[in-house]
Image 1: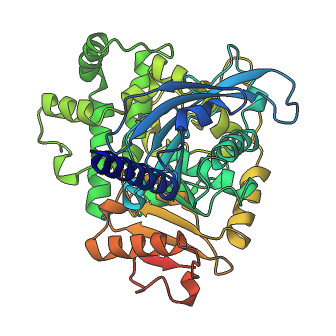
Image 2: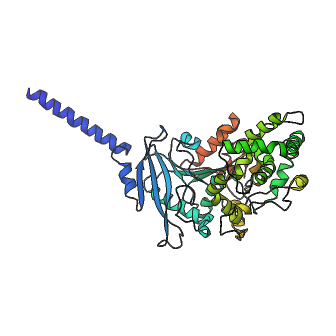
Image 3: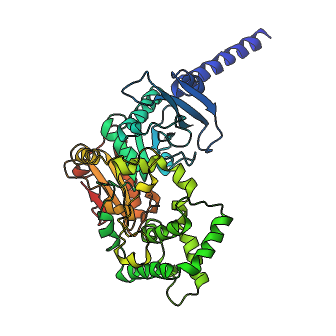
Length: 451
């Protein structure tokens, strides 16, 4: 009996030893993520049901200064989502340009089997003070927000980091990396424009050359059809607006005019199909149904403008935008002045001026210091008009998806190119990354631009 008891005791000791050894080696079981998060000063932590890829998920609210040059001044809380895979895994920082639109794992997170944090942009949605002090909505202040969050979480996740963002989030990813180049190891901005003025004229050149002449003519003819049938279409548009609870402080006629001007940009941005554009043989209902399908009208709706006031402020003061060429449509417009987006500036900021030095500084950094930057673009995306063009002075790659648009992601590329992109990313995230200029970039296809 004593032998049996002694044997059981030895087995129990062995089991406990193995459990302890496993816990120590894995580094997972003996660490409590929630407790570590709660130790970060000024952070509120809430459990979250999220992507099943993550073993734990949390919603975090970081306390941030409105002005990072005055850390003891006014504060606001900034929303961050965290998806945990493992302390021994890399971490992807998704830098949003607007509000957080999803808690799902992105394609880079999945590829790297990584943790993921998603940072809402300052002054959008849940990350804003009661009254927005617009002077502090700058790329430098936003980058400082992201730096504070990443710095705090790097104490928990100390493996490799990659930052990424889409569209305005892609822009914010570049800006953050310029001001805090050592926060992350690699950056992957998607479809990010680099505008040099509040009405960057490169968009006009692009819209005159993208696609085929036949498709561009079909777009122009459809815009003419909309203007020429405005009196018949407006009652249908008003009924649609009523059904969808749209409101237009600018007046629905002006919103209609602007939406027709917006059509060509929206068409190329969102992968429009030339085959689906109605021509002059189409009945009015077909013309209207296509208009509803594309529907740039919502871009000028009150709630959409209100939610995006921070975007318009940034676009018109620092990060730039586009405008409309009205000459071909002047006879159909009441307003024949040069139309840009100043009418969407927040109340009290109407006289704000554009700081052209900000994007010059960003471009100078891109050309000379922007290393381990992997830029993703769609060839037909309207925002490709002002795409980043890195130089040979940097270790950077620009990948352009043939005929791709603003929805372009790594998974959108042809299979061979997709493998090439992931190969570069995997190499850059290794302990000893190679320069693409030393051969790790692989084949130089037309759509693979290595700098």
